[in-house]
Length: 215
Ligand code: G5P
Ligand code: MG
Image (tube, rainbow, N blue to C red; front, side):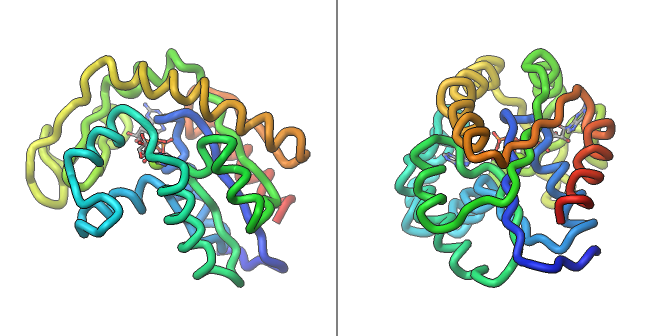
């Protein structure tokens, strides 16, 4: 892991299923950044039945269909970032709306925003070969990272499910209307770096080379 000379704050962006989690895991293997994933934080909160989502059904509804309200997610993420005051971090899944980007900007400025630009058609194909363990949010892909036993979660052995076909479409729509304006927000600040492609393995070397120079 490459140690950093100064504190560095990086955001990774991209549509649902574009590979943010996969690329983040590779980044934190190579660079000393702490990975903060909004999706992981939300899932951890739901699993521990904390006050933010006392109702599992409500969370599922958010998780599958719509975004969590800006004030709820901003409060959660900023609390975690404050605990990392003197560390470098990699933020994944947040901000997803301009209101969230502004809330973040009030506290911290991003040094760099890595944008994964993957065609929607590729993402739709990817999501149809995707299987999810609903209680934990663990995801598998029958081509890319299959479960050890087909149809079963590696950790609990419980059955995996596929989301209804409609849900990727709706999530991509929400990305287009609510999250794409965030890219513009960072483009104006001069920190946006876009990486285009259809395969994570081909995008990754470019991201790695960029961060080597940047960090
Ligand atoms: P999440 O958890 O942030 P999303 O919607 O951003 O979820 P996700 O699923 O986490 O999307 P990702 O991290 O961009 O996608 O991608 P990934 O998991 O690495 O890869 C997706 C799949 O493709 C995996 O199965 C992977 O193995 C496979 N894959 C990767 N690369 C390749 C490849 O090259 N080829 C192939 N064939 N496969 C590949 O958010 C979840 C929910 O939480 C709420 C929302 O409701 C959201 O829907 N939420 C927020 N709400 C409001 N504001 C926020 N800031 C929120 N953050 C989360
Ligand atoms: Mg993710």
